[in-house]
Amino acid sequence: MTNLKFSPGFQLDSIQNSIQEFGFDGWLLYDFRGLNALALKVLGISESEKGSRRFFYFIPAQGEPVKLVHRIESSALDHLLGKKVVYLTWQELHNGLREILGNCPKVAMEYSPDNANPYISRVDAGTVELVRGFGAEVVSSGNLIQYFEARWTDHQWDLHLQADKLNRAAFDEAWQLIAERLRSGKAIRESEVQDYVMDYYAEHGMTTYHPPIVGVNANSGDPHYCPVHGADSEIKLGDFVLLDMWAKMDVPEGVYSDLTKVGFMGETIPEKYKEIFDIVAAARDAGIDCARSAFAEGRELQGWEVDRATRQVIEDAGYGEYFIHRTGHNIGTETHGNGAHMDDLETKEDRLVLPLTCFSIEPGIYLKEFGIRSEINVFINANLEVNVTGGVQTEVTPVLSQY
Image 1 (cartoon, rainbow, N blue to C red):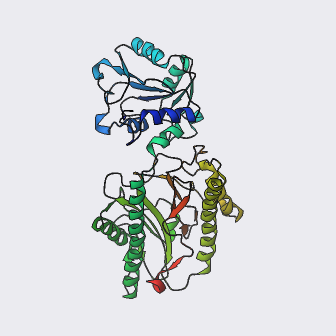
Image 2 (image 1 turned 135 degrees about the vertical axis):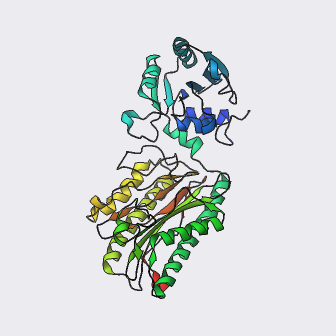
Image 3 (image 1 turned 30 degrees about the horizontal axis):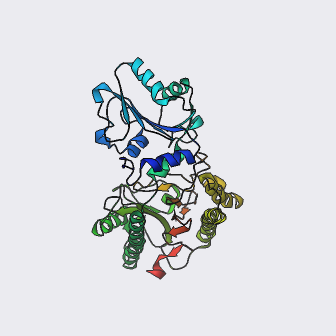
């Protein structure tokens, strides 16, 4: 079977088998001027190649795909298999869409009922109405998208392990830098640590889209805090520091390692940090156990279930109001990838956690004085084994006694 220019390595028969597996009669991929970034990725169309006219690409569960393209951009989908239908007027567009859909009763699109999952909701309401008007039931393509866009190759798993090893070493380097500076009687600024880590990444063949989070004391209580040169804080003896660091190997298909660890700038950890860390760590471990149990039992796992198992631990400890983000996100060539997230807070993530995908588990408790987050990465391999990377932190790091 001839390869389509989908995500690398996938063939038409594989795509159609997946459409059937998820209970759909077809998959209708649509875009207008790059609004549906997911469709562009699946179809192998780069940002620079996106067109200015609407196109549709229909893959039936069985049979030949069909392209519907505008006369001005009639070659837009020539890299894909299938019959071509060309339209010029809006009437021809409607007639062409009716023709390519035929009697398809259930068609998947980048749509989310009630916009419950905005990561998937990329097709406008009017287009969904148009398709429904031809008698088709429109259902979410969320699992199809991640099946072909979020799964890793064996090479990407190897690249993740390389990135994980170096990223964990970057934490050691950062803690060592802080310890040496404090022992010399000097303070060090958050941005200095940030710059040091970025230099480390560059020297070791890694890249990242944004510098890491380095948050001291109250700054660590802001989940999205990031130091700004000239407006950041000093790190001094007796301070608490959170490091959230993400990077990938700077090669094609590189995938991220995204980790968060916390440390105390002293030798003995104060009880207030121990207490909160233990709750966060227990929540993290509950999320890991949730994934392991599901795959060991051979049952389907949806992203919201991991969030619920994790969040319940923090809620039971009385800190539910201080856990203000989802438990985790998909990880791929982008830090926040297009697969299932671990979320029952901002969205009810009902996409499946699929084999060959990776995600973070990163619960946190964010208080006024300090915040604690513990983040690891989880990869489900082809044998349905749950692999945890990043080094599971078991206590707040006493930086001056360990470095």
